[in-house]
Length: 396
Ligand code: HEM
Image (cartoon, rainbow, N blue to C red; front, side, top):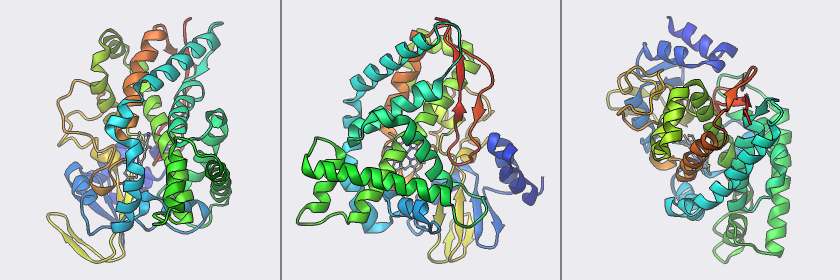
């Protein structure tokens, strides 16, 4: 397939439903391909790893608008010393040891939600795993860390989905008023929580970051305080909810593998790693070249170029993952690229893995007769890959 045709396919609704054939068609032209002058896409596993670890590439560089600006002012799009400063202030809350301490909390919430699902499905009516399990669970957990009330999960899900559309590549350039309105609403929501915590501190991340802003060293600007809290909230459930949904869909489609996990929950780590590889919740990120650079084996990237780093394509590179489209938790493979690499490696990786490691076997165990029911709908998104809804009957 010609390069232009492969790109066209990736940018189409069918490409967003199933991007893997388009990734393969792009990769056939090389691990890094030039899409247009100043625009590149990386699809090869080794190339993606090298680009994510390349200090001469910058993360910043999103177009304007309230939604894009909010994300641009967060740790995700910060570089150099600013990035290190913000990351240091937030990292404590997400350390692997800190995340492990949340195991009991995750188990308690997952158990309560699984039992509620069983109740909702008692009369044989389908129930939606995204709305009734994946989103409420992940919003409760990130909410407990940050200090955001979990009872607003439907509103937060909706605002996050509207805001993150600005992270979609290959969409028509120009203003995104819906996303901007949602971003302003999120800013106001977090702004109100900041005011409340300033008046009455709590043992949560909002309070810790308010102190970093208000302290003598003023380690965070007012803008960074709001932007990072909004980003942590969105990052903390958008991809994690999709990790749970993508994992549950894979297990529902492979009942033999689901039975094995039900019988041996100790295998959960393997399953979670394969879910993140097989159908990564965050399919891509981007980088920008402030200067012309030469990258070993990959050639010259001209100053001002944008790079689309297709993590999901790297995860399906047959050079690293034989028969990449097969879901196989027992493959002996390289680590997936789903949590990124280098300086921006996902801060929430330990927590997201914990949530999936607890929730997937727990749900299989408590709802052994769970089956897909009706038609599940995929989100019409490339970047955040997941399900709008995932209906099942619980058989209870
Ligand atoms: C508890 C849930 C999560 C939280 C709190 C979280 C938080 C974050 C934060 C703060 C960053 C920016 C780090 C930096 O720039 O230094 C980040 C980056 C990233 N996260 Fe997560 N994340 C979560 C779940 C996930 C999940 C489930 C995935 C996909 C499997 C994911 C994939 C990524 C990737 C690929 C990046 C790097 C983006 C880049 O290099 O440009 N995250 N995450």
